[in-house]
Amino acid sequence: MKLKRLQMSNGEKYSILLDESGAPLLYENLFVTIHYRNFSRASNTCHVVFEHLRLLSEICGYLNLNLVERCKAGNFLKKNELQQLKNAASFDVEKIREMFAKHKVSNIVPFKLNPKKLETSRATIIIEDDRNISSYTAYNRITTFAYYLGWLESELCPSKAEYFKAKESTEKTSKTKSLSSESFLLSIRPDRKSSNENETVDWGQWRSLTESQIIEVMDVIRTNSSRNPWWNESVRYRNELIFNFFNSVGCRRGELMKVRVKTDNNQSDIITNEKNGRKYLRINASVDKEDDRTIRPEGKTKGRIVPMDSRLTTMYENYLISHRPNAKGSEYIKYLFVTHNHRTKSNSALSLAQVNKMFRQVSEVVGYRVHPHALRHTWNDRYSKTTDALIEQNKTTDIKSESDRRKLMGWSEKSLSGQHYAKRHTDNRAMDIGLIMQEKHSEQLNQVVGAYDEDIDM
Image 1 (cartoon, one colour):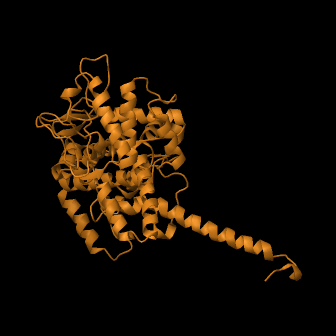
Image 2 (image 1 turned 180 degrees about the vertical axis):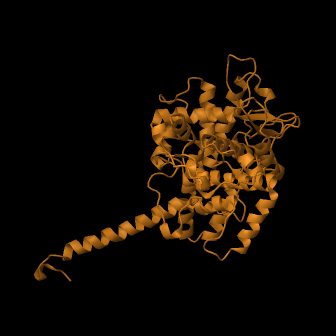
Image 3 (image 1 turned 60 degrees about the vertical axis):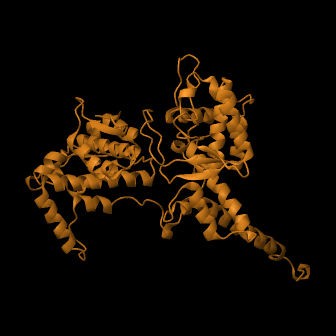
């Protein structure tokens, strides 16, 4: 089974799921088209859904479950089979493929055939509990599985699907109520995040970088650093600008790769305030259908304009004027960041994969993982510390600071993403306060507990 990206005649990027012979899979492609593409979901979002459906198809193949034929016959999946799908969705894709490939008879627990329970006579594959994906990823996979199964049942056997839905609605108060495949899978999803009753604290798993790590990374990517992993001078200046944009603005990878320069047909996305001369970055939310990159950069948030400080402005002007023109054909490319390949007749806009490679190269130098979204998290940590100080000085309020965060990050007014990003800062602040209080109290106790009465200075 193959997942292929393609570009339509109108410039739209999309994906398609093919079988082993190269023919499009009918139901999977129809489902994503109806429920995602027709609702203008981003092409990358559609691609992720296709990946979930490809995994579902692989799991069903290993478990000998023919979803289409079962649905046509009205023989919907049983709860134990749905549980198996849920369990398999909790593993890393490569891990589960490796497990299935190495699957031997010794790993199968056979059931004695019972004519009255033919479905339970199916072998159960036992997988070692070695999950290494987040509950968030498993939650999204199982959600896709559930919606697809619910849609497939409704399309191929509508009468029985409606019967289950009607029965489900009439048994809402029953503890032993019947659930449709969709409802059952949705009910057994892992928690998307921790609940208030089982609060968790970040112990180094948060994706942001510490201040010392940021300093080291910025030192490595200096154009004159001996640790800089790139030999080409123009590439060094380009990559230094990219890292500093991520660090200073907190934008997404897809947003930065869409930034345009001024051409005959386009205005620059670096705009200047004529009154004070300050430059600002315009982040576009719209999809550029003329972008011919294989994986088109896309934004997930609202368009916005964010400020650029003098240091970032100087780096931008230096790259634009002194180094970008060194790339052959750059004058015909409307995007700011381009490749610098001296062996080609014409360069192209920098791809998302090339950005990822840059970060991998820096990660190898510093010895820990550095990636674009980590700098977005780090920006939010820095923002939280800055606004804490301003709140303490009565220069802003909690409500205003979170509103400003949403504006700078491109989130809607109803978005809860700010609370998610602020959680680590809030956790660390609470832990620091609690530790200071304990240490102060312990110091007082050490001076008193066990001392003789005449030694106590009350």
